[in-house]
Length: 183
Image (cartoon, rainbow, N blue to C red; front, side):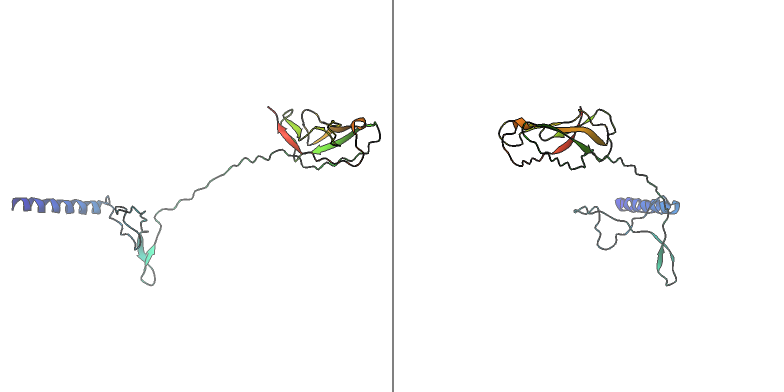
Protein backbone atom coordinates (compact mmCIF):
# COMPACT_ATOMS: atom_id res chain seq x y z
CA UNK A 1 0.00 0.00 0.00
CA UNK A 2 2.89 2.35 0.77
CA UNK A 3 4.45 1.75 -2.69
CA UNK A 4 1.09 2.45 -4.32
CA UNK A 5 0.84 5.86 -2.57
CA UNK A 6 4.38 6.76 -3.71
CA UNK A 7 3.53 5.77 -7.28
CA UNK A 8 0.35 7.92 -7.24
CA UNK A 9 2.36 10.81 -5.79
CA UNK A 10 5.00 10.58 -8.58
CA UNK A 11 2.35 10.41 -11.31
CA UNK A 12 0.53 13.44 -9.93
CA UNK A 13 3.85 15.31 -9.64
CA UNK A 14 4.58 14.62 -13.32
CA UNK A 15 1.10 15.86 -14.33
CA UNK A 16 1.50 18.91 -12.15
CA UNK A 17 4.92 19.73 -13.65
CA UNK A 18 3.61 19.34 -17.21
CA UNK A 19 0.60 21.51 -16.37
CA UNK A 20 2.89 24.31 -15.12
CA UNK A 21 5.01 23.98 -18.25
CA UNK A 22 1.89 24.39 -20.37
CA UNK A 23 0.94 27.48 -18.41
CA UNK A 24 4.39 29.09 -18.82
CA UNK A 25 4.60 28.18 -22.51
CA UNK A 26 7.89 26.30 -21.98
CA UNK A 27 6.57 22.93 -23.02
CA UNK A 28 5.59 22.18 -26.59
CA UNK A 29 2.91 19.55 -26.78
CA UNK A 30 3.62 16.68 -29.14
CA UNK A 31 2.27 17.33 -32.63
CA UNK A 32 -0.04 14.60 -33.86
CA UNK A 33 1.22 12.94 -36.99
CA UNK A 34 -0.98 13.21 -40.07
CA UNK A 35 -2.17 9.97 -41.59
CA UNK A 36 0.45 8.22 -43.69
CA UNK A 37 3.52 9.59 -41.83
CA UNK A 38 5.26 7.18 -39.52
CA UNK A 39 6.65 7.92 -36.07
CA UNK A 40 10.45 8.50 -36.03
CA UNK A 41 10.75 6.16 -33.06
CA UNK A 42 9.28 3.37 -35.14
CA UNK A 43 11.63 0.65 -36.36
CA UNK A 44 11.64 1.89 -39.97
CA UNK A 45 12.87 5.42 -38.97
CA UNK A 46 10.83 7.38 -41.55
CA UNK A 47 11.14 11.15 -41.65
CA UNK A 48 8.54 13.04 -39.61
CA UNK A 49 6.98 16.18 -41.06
CA UNK A 50 5.15 18.34 -38.47
CA UNK A 51 1.75 19.90 -39.20
CA UNK A 52 1.43 23.64 -39.69
CA UNK A 53 -0.23 25.09 -36.58
CA UNK A 54 -3.76 26.35 -37.14
CA UNK A 55 -5.40 29.34 -35.53
CA UNK A 56 -8.62 31.30 -36.13
CA UNK A 57 -11.71 30.40 -38.08
CA UNK A 58 -12.74 31.32 -41.60
CA UNK A 59 -16.23 32.10 -42.84
CA UNK A 60 -17.18 28.42 -43.28
CA UNK A 61 -16.10 27.54 -39.75
CA UNK A 62 -12.92 25.73 -40.87
CA UNK A 63 -9.56 26.43 -39.29
CA UNK A 64 -7.29 28.96 -40.98
CA UNK A 65 -3.53 28.56 -41.19
CA UNK A 66 -1.23 31.47 -40.37
CA UNK A 67 2.53 31.60 -40.70
CA UNK A 68 4.14 32.60 -37.43
CA UNK A 69 7.30 34.13 -38.95
CA UNK A 70 8.36 34.90 -42.50
CA UNK A 71 11.80 35.70 -43.79
CA UNK A 72 13.04 37.10 -47.07
CA UNK A 73 16.40 35.73 -48.11
CA UNK A 74 18.31 37.40 -50.91
CA UNK A 75 21.18 35.60 -52.56
CA UNK A 76 23.75 36.76 -55.05
CA UNK A 77 25.59 34.40 -57.37
CA UNK A 78 28.84 35.25 -59.13
CA UNK A 79 30.15 32.94 -61.80
CA UNK A 80 33.48 33.02 -63.58
CA UNK A 81 33.04 31.79 -67.13
CA UNK A 82 36.16 30.74 -69.00
CA UNK A 83 35.96 30.34 -72.76
CA UNK A 84 38.96 28.43 -74.09
CA UNK A 85 41.02 29.94 -76.86
CA UNK A 86 40.36 28.09 -80.11
CA UNK A 87 40.93 28.41 -83.85
CA UNK A 88 37.76 29.48 -85.68
CA UNK A 89 39.05 29.84 -89.24
CA UNK A 90 39.28 27.17 -91.90
CA UNK A 91 42.37 27.46 -94.07
CA UNK A 92 42.46 26.18 -97.63
CA UNK A 93 45.77 26.55 -99.43
CA UNK A 94 45.93 25.94 -103.16
CA UNK A 95 49.18 26.29 -105.06
CA UNK A 96 50.56 25.28 -108.43
CA UNK A 97 54.24 24.36 -108.32
CA UNK A 98 56.08 24.03 -111.61
CA UNK A 99 59.43 22.27 -111.76
CA UNK A 100 61.90 23.24 -109.06
CA UNK A 101 60.02 26.29 -107.82
CA UNK A 102 60.03 27.18 -104.14
CA UNK A 103 56.70 28.71 -103.08
CA UNK A 104 55.99 30.69 -99.92
CA UNK A 105 52.23 30.86 -99.35
CA UNK A 106 51.10 33.14 -96.48
CA UNK A 107 47.92 32.42 -94.52
CA UNK A 108 46.08 33.81 -91.52
CA UNK A 109 44.78 32.02 -88.45
CA UNK A 110 41.81 33.56 -86.63
CA UNK A 111 41.04 32.78 -82.99
CA UNK A 112 37.70 33.17 -81.20
CA UNK A 113 39.14 36.03 -79.10
CA UNK A 114 42.40 37.82 -78.39
CA UNK A 115 44.66 36.00 -75.90
CA UNK A 116 44.62 37.58 -72.42
CA UNK A 117 48.31 36.77 -71.79
CA UNK A 118 51.20 37.74 -74.02
CA UNK A 119 53.75 35.10 -75.07
CA UNK A 120 51.69 32.31 -73.50
CA UNK A 121 49.73 30.64 -76.34
CA UNK A 122 51.16 29.07 -79.46
CA UNK A 123 49.76 27.39 -82.55
CA UNK A 124 50.21 23.65 -82.84
CA UNK A 125 49.77 21.68 -86.05
CA UNK A 126 49.08 17.98 -86.34
CA UNK A 127 52.00 17.97 -88.83
CA UNK A 128 54.36 20.79 -89.70
CA UNK A 129 56.75 18.79 -91.88
CA UNK A 130 54.71 17.17 -94.64
CA UNK A 131 55.34 14.71 -97.44
CA UNK A 132 52.59 15.98 -99.74
CA UNK A 133 53.14 13.44 -102.55
CA UNK A 134 53.72 10.42 -100.30
CA UNK A 135 57.14 9.43 -101.72
CA UNK A 136 58.89 9.40 -98.33
CA UNK A 137 60.72 12.73 -98.70
CA UNK A 138 59.33 15.81 -96.86
CA UNK A 139 58.61 18.61 -99.31
CA UNK A 140 56.21 20.99 -97.55
CA UNK A 141 56.83 22.90 -94.30
CA UNK A 142 54.48 25.02 -92.20
CA UNK A 143 55.97 27.97 -90.34
CA UNK A 144 54.31 30.07 -87.61
CA UNK A 145 55.59 32.46 -84.96
CA UNK A 146 56.44 30.91 -81.61
CA UNK A 147 53.62 32.72 -79.78
CA UNK A 148 50.29 34.09 -80.87
CA UNK A 149 49.38 37.42 -79.23
CA UNK A 150 46.60 38.74 -81.46
CA UNK A 151 43.14 37.54 -82.45
CA UNK A 152 44.38 37.13 -86.05
CA UNK A 153 47.86 35.76 -86.64
CA UNK A 154 49.21 36.94 -90.02
CA UNK A 155 52.85 35.75 -89.90
CA UNK A 156 52.16 32.15 -90.94
CA UNK A 157 53.24 30.61 -94.21
CA UNK A 158 53.64 27.30 -96.01
CA UNK A 159 56.89 26.67 -97.86
CA UNK A 160 56.74 24.16 -100.73
CA UNK A 161 59.91 22.85 -102.39
CA UNK A 162 59.06 21.81 -105.95
CA UNK A 163 62.34 19.94 -106.45
CA UNK A 164 61.39 17.45 -103.69
CA UNK A 165 58.00 16.61 -105.20
CA UNK A 166 58.49 13.53 -107.34
CA UNK A 167 54.91 12.70 -108.35
CA UNK A 168 52.85 14.89 -110.66
CA UNK A 169 49.21 15.54 -110.00
CA UNK A 170 46.93 17.10 -107.46
CA UNK A 171 47.88 16.35 -103.84
CA UNK A 172 45.65 16.97 -100.79
CA UNK A 173 46.54 16.91 -97.12
CA UNK A 174 44.43 17.77 -94.06
CA UNK A 175 46.26 19.36 -91.15
CA UNK A 176 44.59 20.07 -87.80
CA UNK A 177 45.39 23.34 -86.01
CA UNK A 178 44.99 23.79 -82.25
CA UNK A 179 46.07 26.32 -79.62
CA UNK A 180 48.69 25.12 -77.15
CA UNK A 181 49.11 26.62 -73.68
CA UNK A 182 52.60 27.72 -72.68
CA UNK A 183 54.45 26.41 -69.64
